[in-house]
Length: 179
Length: 186
Image 1 (tube, chains in turn yellow, cyan):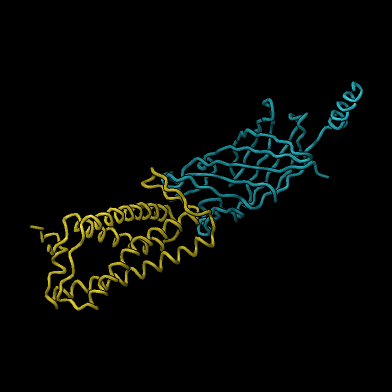
Image 2 (cartoon, rainbow over the protein chains, first blue to last red):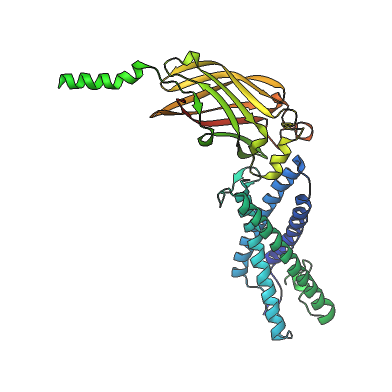
């Protein structure tokens, strides 16, 4: 049985890692800015990047169905395997829920998302200030949760590499080319 | 039968002939004064919650019609409180120094049918410009609806100065849309 991820899966993993890191950093930075043209520009870019992340996620999930990821090593205890699967599931759910909550928030606040200023993304909700504020809290909360699970994800990968000394981290590294 | 029709025709014509209908009051609570613009290429809209009007419009004598609007600029609703506060500030409306926008009609032309063209002067932030608005007049019983729109360039009124002066974030062109319910008043 193969024990590595496909080149496409690796590419999507690392591309999204960079994109999501940038999105989260930009999100927290821009929301603290005072109202200015720069702030409005950054919000638009953040939304475009968010739509891109959602599209990449859809492709990634489809790819995951077509090319199943390698199994976890048999050396891992069942309970740890279960936690690993639950963690990955949570990351996928959040990678879907976070852009969706941003999209809903934009709709409720009356700021339609127009992808790259060209393609209008339909508003999912009627304009409603209170609902918009609530969705903003939800969007922020989901991101804090995502960051917490992500820290666990990184910690687990490093533990596998340096403590368990298995190939869990290496099989996702770009250098480890499939044979 | 012939007499009946004559009576009916007379009855229908009488109220108009007796005295022309003059619309004198705009029910601001049933009227909307909105605006539209583009932000980062995205169509946005908002409205003003408070405005006062003076009106005198007789469809039979459009040339003598008059309209005056005073818009409370601080009553703006852009959709976000952050933006509402921003546009009240010095770089935008500067509502502390210039609390109202005023429109005074100078001429009203009948374009045929129920269409009219209202020309007038719009004053905001100490600057005055000529504007022309096509208006559709729709009588509804003893009330009437006026629908219309016009656009202006925000640069002409120095609305959005300093870092907002460039049009790449907020476009120069602003559309004003109004839907006014008028009655014949007291």
